[in-house]
Length: 421
Image (cartoon, rainbow, N blue to C red):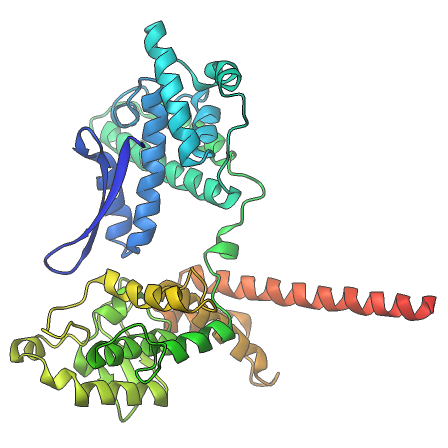
């Protein structure tokens, strides 16, 4: 059993709370402060926060296996040493079962010797005892773990340097040492792990989109939900995600008067970046009108006064997690819908379709790349200086280049075959 647990629950206000718990001492202080300040405030998804906290939990478990306290060392102790980096990265690269096994054996050796040991010193004995190869996590997962732990270490470094400067202490030595540790740690990211714009921006196929539409339509026999109210509500949520590429929280925060049926506009009033007006299609406008006419108007008066569009039948506002469950339920019964499908995946998919639409324009109407990036940033609610629009544009360009290269190879092979004949 791991020494930590990532616990998720919904507050009374409907917000998703994610905490890292020590199985013996309860909620951890510094990791939860870090995620709150860096991820919650920025509106990052609960699933992302869970992964970040799990990675930090693994790093704390690594330190505990050596009879050390990671948070104390980073907060006010000697910080990490450069010699710690290989063993920490190595531990983050193991799957959970192997981490548990390594922790147990390292603690046994350290306690029997009465001193804390470096992880590298224990490997020969462990492998002799195990008699088998340790199992590693997927390189993509390992890369993400190391990046998130490096963020946590960097956050502590910046906090300590700020405290030292305020108190008039010389921060030069700690700054140089901390930057060296961070550099070495980031160098441990596997070279064969996918980069951010290759894994975090992947959408779903048109076939998967069609399967979602067919499954979540209120009249569908495959629809996993029974209540007519829930079917109509969930279908509207799906259509808003599909048409606008909105964030999960942006649809969750929608009010009934944020959608204009006549002009087919959706006003995103609450956003972690930029409120904006977006366009919806005829199908989505009709789904909104049907839901308002047949269901929303029957909610309790107090719920209608508050104005939230997405509630349960009693008028209680839906949690953010409830929107994920819409896609989870569809995924569970339709194999054509990928396991990764979620509101955020649909946001990525919207960007794929945007790129394809730009490509389909005549040459004289196609905007320059810089203008395309500006348009994408505005429609997706990113700031004008955001790098996200450029990341999506660069990824699409790379994919198109790969397709052209594949066609060239195929044509070359065909030509060689003809010549041989």
